[in-house]
Length: 342
Image (cartoon, rainbow, N blue to C red; front, side, top):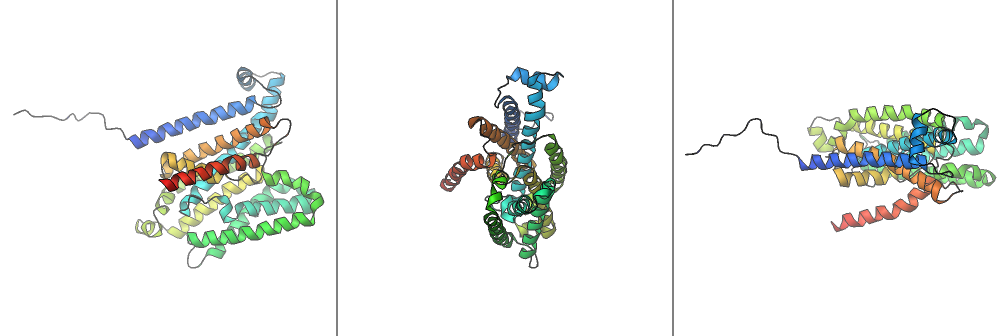
C-alpha cells in the first residue's frame, strides 16, 4: 500500500483576500504619487515631468524650481495631509457609529470649526493669524458638546448621531445669521467656507504635519478597539473592551484629525464620507487594512481634486471643496444604489 508523506516545508496556501488587499494598497500608493506628480506639473505654467524631478532634486535658480518648491509642492503636500486626516477621521467614525454615512460633520466638527472661523473673519479680522487654532478649538468644543448631550449612562451611536444633527443645525443657523448681519464681509469668508488650498504654503504644511503624525500614531493604537466596536457594544464587552472609553478615545481622535484639517484648508467636505466607503468596498472592514487604504485614498483624492480645480478653470482658482461635492455626490449616490441592488 502506498504511503503519502506530507512535505513539512511546503509553502503555505495564499490568502486571496490578503493578496487583494495588498494589491489595492499598492495601486493606491501608485495613484497617490501620480496625483502628487501631476499636481506639481499642472498650473498656469505647465512644467514637464523631467523638469519637475530636476527641480525637486537639483538646486538651481531656475523658474521651474521656484514654482515647484515655493508654490506647488507645499500646496499639494498640504492637500495630501488634509485628505489623510479627513478620511481617517471618517473611517473611524463610520466604524464607531456602525453607519457608512457617518463623517466628521456628523459630530459637529465641521460646523464647530466653521463657526469659530466665521467669528474670527467677520467680528475680529485683526486676529486673523489665530484663525487655524480658533477653528481647531471650535471643532473640539462642538464635538465635546455633542458627546455631553448624548451621554446618559453611556453615549450610544444613536444618541450621538441625533445630538450631532441638532448641534450641526444650531451652529449652521448661527453661522448663517452672522453672515447675513455682516453681509459686507461675507466675500472674505466664502473661500474658507467652500474649502480651498489657494495660497497654502510651507507654514500651513508645517502646522498640519505634526497633527497628522500624532493622529496616525494614535490611530495605530486604536485599531484593535475599532475592530471590536464594529461588532457591536455587547460583543465588544464580551471580548473585554471598555466600550464607552474606547468610543470616547476614537471620537476624540477623529475630532482631532478632522479639526486640524479644517483649520488649515477650510470646510472641505465629502472626503471623510466617500473615501472610507469606497475603501471598505475594496478591502473590507478590518481596520489593519481599511485604515491605511482610507488614508491613501483621501490624500490622493484631495490632491487630484485640487489639481483639477486650479487647472480646469484657469485663471480662476475654483474651491476644491465645491468641486469635490459636485463630482462626488453623484458617485456616492451611484454607490448607494449599487449596494441596495446587492
